Each structure stands twice: as C-alpha cells, then as structure tokens.
Image: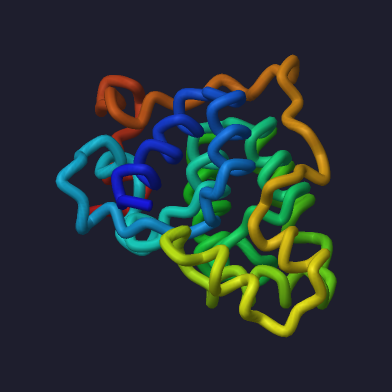
Length: 194
C-alpha cells in the first residue's frame, strides 16, 4: 500500500472518521508507524515532537487528537505497533507532552493502558505483526508462516474483536495546526521544540 494511504489513515483518525478507520483496518491496512519527516505532506509536522514524528502510529495519532473511541478500537483489536506497547519510551514521552495541555480524558486512557502489563500473547502478536511489514505482499508472508490459521487470519485484521463505538463523545481535541502563542501555550513550549 502506498505511503499516502498510511498518511490518509492518520488524517482520518485525526478528523474522527470512525467508519473509514474501521474500513481501512478490516480491509488490509497493517499497523505501521510513519516517519512524517520524510513526507511532503505538512499536515502532521505541527504539534508533534521529533521522536514521535519519526514513529507516528495510528494509536499515537488517536491519542494526540483526543480520539479515544478510535484509540480504544485500535487497542481492543490489537492494531498496535512496537511504539504502542506498554513500557515504550515514546508512549511515556507522549503522556508527558499531553500532560502539559491538560487532556484529562486522554491522560486517563494512557494511564490505564500503561498500568496494565501486556500479555505475552499480545506482545508477541505486535512483534510478529511488525516483522511482517506493510500490506504489499503481507498476506502471502502471513500465509507462509508456521502459525495456526486462526493467528494468520488475525494478523490480516479482517475481523474485529471489538467494534468501533460510534456514539462515544471524545475529549475536545486540540487544533495542533492552528495553535499559537495567543492560546496561552505555543508548540515550542508544549513539545520542547526550542
């Protein structure tokens, strides 16, 4: 799948397009991190510190934009990357960054996510999924693994463990793209970009 498809998924998460996110997840999108520094698209260049810019995952995007229904959907369906696992320094860094702008509901979600050690099965699944890489040829690579068919199917994400909560009210999101010093906090201050 072209890089622009991953950027499109991240934009859909940011703009709370829940049905489209659900569709992309169940139709072959793989959980990958995008290095937005290598992108011509400037959509994600504001409001994201350098280490997160190099590893922007679907879950991190949902948390940055306060899209907790999407974040919960991704966690429940194991649509995670190594950046998203409990103990990841980037996840802790994200939590610290969000604390400066008082996104209480998002912080609670992260704290709940970080407070529970991930099962060995889930950690292994994330590692295998990351090793299988992007969608181009992914199904063939999955089918060539010695894993049981049920795990092979899960690695392709055609079925959901939990569906998307469509009526959930997300936390009011921060407009990272139009934030300025007049708002009481600038991007440099929030993400220590100075």
